[in-house]
Each structure stands twice: as structure tokens, then as C-alpha cells.
Amino acid sequence: MIPDLSASTHVRLARPSLNLTAAERFYVEGLGLSVLYRSAEDAFADLLMLGIPGAGWHLELTRPRKNALQPTPTGEDLLVLYLGRVPDPETLARLEDCGGRRVPAENPYWEQWGVTIADPDGYRLVLCQRSWSA
Image (cartoon, rainbow, N blue to C red; front, side):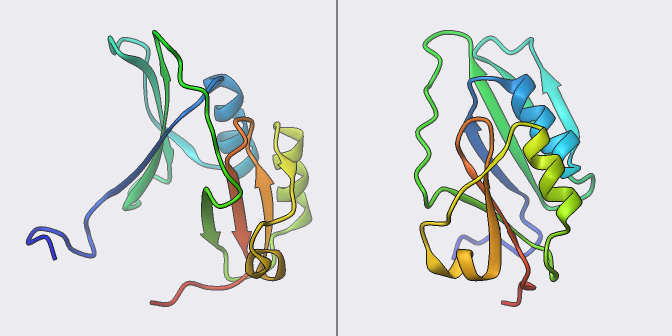
């Protein structure tokens, strides 16, 4: 184990986006995350960091200024949120209204225990009805 790695180590999930405005709408208006940081001043890329204030993780979306990377998500590139309950229909409808689309899960486990929604870049968000336990 890395000596400084602990349960309180902050996690950043970073990936490219073709349209930060569409991604922000999906994750903020649709899912309810907050914009934690935004920058259009970075020389390399526009940045959008999303999450829950005070949480130990955040999602960073980037739009490189030159040679924009084409997102290439697979059916197993998942952001899984363990809700501990069945996702409410209003949330699912809002995610779809904000640019998401329901897709079948590649893994039957997620099909049984959650709802899978592709974000505007095609990355998959799973709203899992189970609770997380290590």
C-alpha cells in the first residue's frame, strides 16, 4: 500500500467531454451535483469539476483546447452511485430531460440492481438501489 493512501484520500475521476455545457446540465440539473470549480483560463483545457461539497470525490470533465479528445466510453466505463433505494422516477425523467438516455447495462448485475443512463458524452451513470458496504 502507498504510505499516504487512506480512507480519507480524495478521489478525482477525470475524463474528456465534447460539450461541457451539456455535461453540466446533465450532472447539475439532472443529477443534482454542484459545480465545485470551473476554469476557462487553463492553457491546456477548459475544466469543469462537479460533485457534492465536502465529499471525498469529484468528477472532472475536460475539453482540451487543441486536439480535443473524442470520448470513447465502453459499456463498462461506469460511475456508480449507491443510493440504498430504488431511484425515483422524477430523477430518471429529469436526467433524460437533461440529455441522458437510458441504456441496457452490459453487466447483468447492474441491470438487476440499478438503472443505467448514458450521459451526453456516452459515459454511463448507474443509480444502484443497493447500499455500499466494504
